[in-house]
Length: 172
Image 1: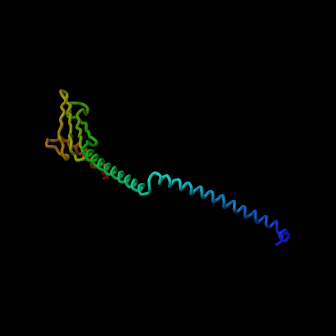
Image 2 (image 1 turned 60 degrees about the vertical axis):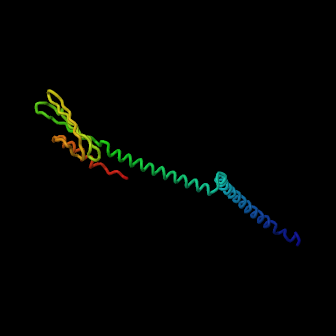
Image 3 (image 1 turned 120 degrees about the horizontal axis):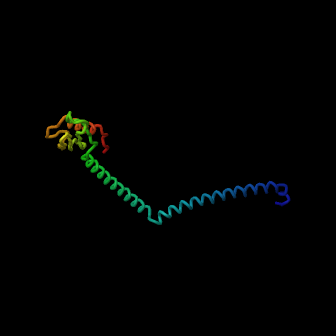
Protein backbone atom coordinates (compact mmCIF):
# COMPACT_ATOMS: atom_id res chain seq x y z
CA UNK A 1 0.00 0.00 0.00
CA UNK A 2 1.23 3.28 -0.86
CA UNK A 3 0.99 6.46 1.26
CA UNK A 4 -0.02 8.52 -1.68
CA UNK A 5 -3.28 6.60 -1.91
CA UNK A 6 -4.14 7.62 1.70
CA UNK A 7 -3.40 11.29 1.22
CA UNK A 8 -6.92 12.27 0.13
CA UNK A 9 -8.23 10.74 3.39
CA UNK A 10 -5.80 12.41 5.80
CA UNK A 11 -8.37 14.88 7.10
CA UNK A 12 -10.87 12.06 7.72
CA UNK A 13 -8.21 9.97 9.45
CA UNK A 14 -7.17 12.93 11.62
CA UNK A 15 -10.78 13.62 12.64
CA UNK A 16 -11.43 9.94 13.40
CA UNK A 17 -8.20 9.80 15.44
CA UNK A 18 -9.28 12.92 17.36
CA UNK A 19 -12.72 11.44 18.07
CA UNK A 20 -11.15 8.20 19.29
CA UNK A 21 -8.78 10.24 21.49
CA UNK A 22 -11.69 12.18 23.02
CA UNK A 23 -13.61 8.95 23.69
CA UNK A 24 -10.50 7.45 25.30
CA UNK A 25 -10.10 10.57 27.45
CA UNK A 26 -13.74 10.40 28.64
CA UNK A 27 -13.37 6.68 29.44
CA UNK A 28 -10.15 7.37 31.35
CA UNK A 29 -11.79 10.12 33.45
CA UNK A 30 -14.83 7.96 34.27
CA UNK A 31 -12.54 5.03 35.14
CA UNK A 32 -10.54 7.25 37.51
CA UNK A 33 -13.75 8.49 39.18
CA UNK A 34 -15.02 4.94 39.60
CA UNK A 35 -11.66 3.78 40.95
CA UNK A 36 -11.73 6.63 43.49
CA UNK A 37 -15.22 5.57 44.63
CA UNK A 38 -14.13 1.95 44.96
CA UNK A 39 -11.03 3.04 46.87
CA UNK A 40 -13.21 4.90 49.41
CA UNK A 41 -15.42 1.83 49.86
CA UNK A 42 -12.37 -0.39 50.25
CA UNK A 43 -10.95 1.95 52.89
CA UNK A 44 -14.23 1.74 54.84
CA UNK A 45 -14.12 -2.05 54.69
CA UNK A 46 -10.48 -2.01 55.77
CA UNK A 47 -11.44 0.06 58.81
CA UNK A 48 -13.95 -2.61 59.81
CA UNK A 49 -11.67 -5.51 59.05
CA UNK A 50 -8.68 -3.85 60.70
CA UNK A 51 -10.64 -3.52 63.93
CA UNK A 52 -12.09 -7.02 63.75
CA UNK A 53 -13.36 -9.56 61.34
CA UNK A 54 -17.03 -9.59 60.36
CA UNK A 55 -17.84 -12.36 62.83
CA UNK A 56 -16.47 -10.25 65.67
CA UNK A 57 -18.43 -7.22 64.44
CA UNK A 58 -21.59 -9.34 64.43
CA UNK A 59 -20.85 -10.63 67.95
CA UNK A 60 -20.23 -7.11 69.25
CA UNK A 61 -23.44 -5.86 67.66
CA UNK A 62 -25.40 -8.76 69.14
CA UNK A 63 -23.90 -8.08 72.59
CA UNK A 64 -24.78 -4.39 72.31
CA UNK A 65 -28.39 -5.23 71.42
CA UNK A 66 -28.59 -7.63 74.38
CA UNK A 67 -27.18 -4.96 76.68
CA UNK A 68 -29.75 -2.44 75.45
CA UNK A 69 -32.52 -5.02 75.93
CA UNK A 70 -31.36 -5.61 79.53
CA UNK A 71 -31.35 -1.85 80.15
CA UNK A 72 -34.85 -1.57 78.67
CA UNK A 73 -36.10 -4.42 80.89
CA UNK A 74 -34.54 -2.75 83.95
CA UNK A 75 -36.19 0.55 82.99
CA UNK A 76 -39.58 -1.19 82.66
CA UNK A 77 -39.18 -2.72 86.14
CA UNK A 78 -38.17 0.67 87.55
CA UNK A 79 -41.16 2.38 85.90
CA UNK A 80 -43.47 -0.30 87.32
CA UNK A 81 -42.04 0.30 90.81
CA UNK A 82 -42.47 4.05 90.38
CA UNK A 83 -46.10 3.59 89.30
CA UNK A 84 -46.80 1.43 92.36
CA UNK A 85 -45.17 4.03 94.61
CA UNK A 86 -47.05 6.82 92.85
CA UNK A 87 -50.36 5.06 93.51
CA UNK A 88 -49.61 5.30 97.24
CA UNK A 89 -48.88 9.03 97.09
CA UNK A 90 -51.49 11.67 97.80
CA UNK A 91 -53.31 12.81 94.72
CA UNK A 92 -54.82 16.28 94.44
CA UNK A 93 -56.09 17.30 97.91
CA UNK A 94 -59.65 18.61 98.13
CA UNK A 95 -60.53 21.34 100.63
CA UNK A 96 -63.85 22.81 101.73
CA UNK A 97 -64.10 25.92 103.86
CA UNK A 98 -67.26 26.57 105.83
CA UNK A 99 -68.75 28.42 108.77
CA UNK A 100 -69.06 25.86 111.58
CA UNK A 101 -70.93 28.17 113.98
CA UNK A 102 -73.46 30.80 113.02
CA UNK A 103 -72.15 33.32 115.58
CA UNK A 104 -68.64 33.24 114.07
CA UNK A 105 -68.29 35.19 110.86
CA UNK A 106 -66.41 34.04 107.74
CA UNK A 107 -65.60 30.54 106.55
CA UNK A 108 -62.73 29.93 108.94
CA UNK A 109 -63.37 26.22 109.51
CA UNK A 110 -62.24 23.71 106.90
CA UNK A 111 -61.97 20.03 106.01
CA UNK A 112 -59.31 18.70 103.67
CA UNK A 113 -58.91 15.17 102.29
CA UNK A 114 -55.49 13.72 101.43
CA UNK A 115 -56.10 10.44 99.59
CA UNK A 116 -54.03 8.17 97.35
CA UNK A 117 -55.28 6.35 94.24
CA UNK A 118 -56.90 3.60 96.35
CA UNK A 119 -58.84 6.14 98.43
CA UNK A 120 -56.60 5.61 101.47
CA UNK A 121 -55.28 8.52 103.49
CA UNK A 122 -56.55 11.04 106.01
CA UNK A 123 -59.13 13.77 106.31
CA UNK A 124 -58.22 16.77 108.48
CA UNK A 125 -60.86 19.06 109.92
CA UNK A 126 -60.26 22.32 111.72
CA UNK A 127 -63.20 23.84 113.55
CA UNK A 128 -62.81 27.53 114.34
CA UNK A 129 -64.83 29.05 117.19
CA UNK A 130 -64.68 32.32 119.12
CA UNK A 131 -63.03 30.75 122.13
CA UNK A 132 -60.87 28.05 120.54
CA UNK A 133 -59.82 26.18 117.42
CA UNK A 134 -59.79 22.37 117.29
CA UNK A 135 -58.21 20.14 114.62
CA UNK A 136 -59.20 16.52 114.02
CA UNK A 137 -57.55 13.89 111.85
CA UNK A 138 -59.41 10.76 110.78
CA UNK A 139 -57.92 7.83 108.86
CA UNK A 140 -59.57 6.88 105.58
CA UNK A 141 -59.41 3.45 103.93
CA UNK A 142 -61.04 2.93 100.53
CA UNK A 143 -63.00 6.15 101.02
CA UNK A 144 -64.42 5.07 104.42
CA UNK A 145 -63.46 5.84 108.01
CA UNK A 146 -64.04 3.85 111.19
CA UNK A 147 -64.93 7.21 112.82
CA UNK A 148 -68.12 9.18 112.35
CA UNK A 149 -67.68 11.65 109.47
CA UNK A 150 -69.31 15.05 109.25
CA UNK A 151 -71.12 16.21 106.13
CA UNK A 152 -68.16 18.42 105.19
CA UNK A 153 -65.68 15.55 105.65
CA UNK A 154 -67.82 13.25 103.51
CA UNK A 155 -68.01 15.99 100.90
CA UNK A 156 -64.22 16.42 100.61
CA UNK A 157 -63.70 12.62 100.58
CA UNK A 158 -66.25 12.30 97.78
CA UNK A 159 -64.57 15.16 95.95
CA UNK A 160 -61.14 13.54 96.30
CA UNK A 161 -62.52 10.16 95.20
CA UNK A 162 -64.14 11.87 92.20
CA UNK A 163 -60.81 13.50 91.39
CA UNK A 164 -59.13 10.09 91.54
CA UNK A 165 -61.72 8.58 89.19
CA UNK A 166 -61.21 11.37 86.63
CA UNK A 167 -57.45 10.84 86.44
CA UNK A 168 -56.29 9.22 83.16
CA UNK A 169 -55.37 5.56 83.30
CA UNK A 170 -51.63 4.83 83.39
CA UNK A 171 -50.11 2.96 80.47
CA UNK A 172 -48.30 -0.22 81.46
